[in-house]
Structures are given as structure tokens and as C-alpha cells.
Amino acid sequence: MVVAEAPIRYEQKTGYKREFRLDIYDPTVSEQRLRKDIDSYLGEYRFKVREYRFNLHYKANDAGEFRLRSDDGQSMVEVGEAAIADRQQGGGSLYKVSADLNGVKRQEELLAAAEDGDVIMYGSPPDKQAGYTYGFVYVGRVEKTWKGKVLHTRAIRVPDGTTLEQFNQALSAFTKEQVAYETPNSFIEHPELISGDYDDATIDAVLQNAFAFGVSEAERHTFALMQQDPNLQGLVDQFIQLVRDDASFDEKAALFDIIENYAEETWKEYLERGEEMPERREQRSMQLAPREQMSIGALKDRYGYTPTQVSGTCPNENDRTSADIFGVGSLFEPVLKKLGLTKDEEKSGFECPNCHVGWVVGDKCPNCKITAKEWGDKNPDKKCA
Image (cartoon, rainbow, N blue to C red; front, side, top):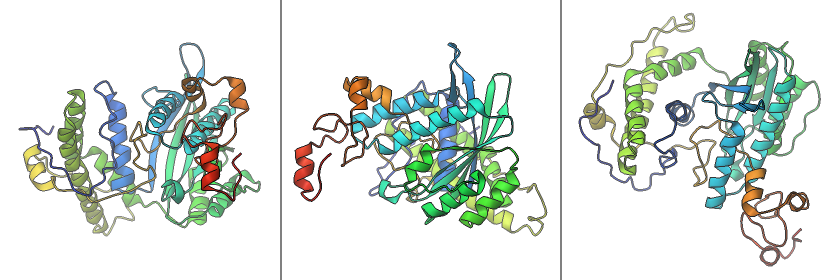
């Protein structure tokens, strides 16, 4: 366990844009969720891992309603509702999270019919206009349990510059039908149920052929080492305690800088040590000794510098309610209620031509606040719906 000798002072880093939201966690957040958020953030942003694994659970609540849930039991729809409420307050676009909601609902439908061993697959292609510079393919293997079903999911990162056509080709290979989606959100909205006849090796081979990438054993083992590294886990323990204590932003920021820098340097060191092993390709288990345990003072002295700037698939907006890169959001019900819209009004709505919210009613968009006249003045050659 890393023990803090004294509070760490934080100096504002000029020009540094922090990608991990420190201000969204209150002292009541579950330790499991916060730890998982940090783990997944480091995996994507600092380690740039090609594959990240997590589980989703399709099980009933006290009322007997089956819902898709995270490891800590939260309904994915409810998580999305919180995200949408926050996004509404921040004035962010709701276009992508509506696709997330549709995708979650579709997964629930597929899980209801899925057999043991079946696969649920969907893509999240790069969308540079929305700030998503690369994408993922999600492959979930269904396991039946006495409580319901578990979706053992692999989020497989695809290289920068991949095209919608590559995603269409990959999905077509599994569905045996011609897939021709024209927007990134269409893939998110349409998960597919794939026969359990495809084992993981076959799935990987098809995806690697479609996207020209591979997941190395060295990377898998190194990520496992990082998840067990005593210094990193001790620092995360300290950060969780700061959140529990409702510490100041400066205290949390200073410690999180150390977490990011230690994680990035140690990741590179583990990879280099692994590459030096001549038998690495033949060994399924790399025997690398963990770093020596250090005091928080020593960690601060060595790793308290400004982290390198990073970017990922989740643009850092004021509307994020989780740093979990695999979190999804829901849209319609909470937003309709907040706006006081009836179901009939919702059905008669149209898509805003400015921010693309799909249920605008009247002559003013409740999301981006633009009026029909303002849109017409800015776009005289286009007609406002």
C-alpha cells in the first residue's frame, strides 16, 4: 500500500487539457465503478491497448424486468439517463447518445433471444466531425447463468483512418448479408446476433483481415501486469480515498497527474523488458518482476510533472458523467419529461438541421436553442424543416 506523507500541492498546467473528468465523482460513487473508470481510461488513453475486456449482465431487477447492467449492477439505461441530464445542462449535442440508447435497447432484445455461446457484435467507427478519432468493434460472447445472461465483451480498437466500408465488410462477413450503413451512428444503433459457431480465433482472423491489425500477446500480458502493479494500485487507492473525503480539485488533480505519468512510463518499461525476452513469442506467460514499491513522496518527486497531452474516442465535454470509455447513454424518456413534452408531441417532432436532435417540436430546438428563423438566416440556400 502506498502511504501519503502529506497533501500534494497542485500547480495549474498551462495549456494542458485534462481528458479524465475529476469533477464528476461524488463521495458516494462505488469503488468498483471508479476503479474501473480509471482502469479503462488508462487502457485507452495512456496504454492505447488494442483490446479491453469487460462484462455486461442481462438480469432482472426487483420488479422482474430484465435490463442490461454493468458489473456493479447499474442499468445501462439509467447510466445513460444521468449522462443525458448532465448533457442537457451543458448544452451538448444529443445526436450520438440517441444512437447509444438505440444500441442498448437492441442488445437487450438480442439477449432475450440469444443462446449460450452466441455472439453480439457491433461497431463504433471513427467520427472525426464529432471528435472521435478512432473506433472500436465490440464482440460480446453470451453465457447463460441462473440469474440471466452475461455478455463477456471485448472492445477491440481499430486503427486510425479506418473507413465505414471496412466496418461494413467486416459485419457482412459475419451476418452473411450485405451491410451498407452510411453513418457511424448506424453501426452503434444496430448490434447483430452472430451464431455461436464462430470461435474467438475465427472472429479475430476476420477482423484482423478487415482492419489490418493484430493484438499481441506482449500487450495482453503487459496490460495484466499494469492492473496488478502495486504502485499503480496504491496510487489509485489514494485517489479513491481523496474522492471519498471530498478533497479539493487541486489535490485530486495533483495525484492523478502522478497516476498518469507513472502508468505511462511503467507501461513502456514493461513492454521494453518484454521485447528483450528472446523466448517471448513462445511463452504464454511473461515472467516480469513488478516495480519496487515506492512512497508517495518518491512517486511525486519523479512523476509529478505535466502529463503528455492525449486524446481518445470520448471528447472531453462538460456533458460526460463517467470516464468509462465503454459507457453508453439513453435519451428520450428523461429529456421528454424534463422538457414537458407529451408522447404525441414527441412523435410529431422532426430532426433539428443544426444539432440533429430527432424530436424537435415547434420552431425552436430545445437542445441547441436555434430557431427556424435563425437557421434560415444562416443558411439561406437551405430550408429549415
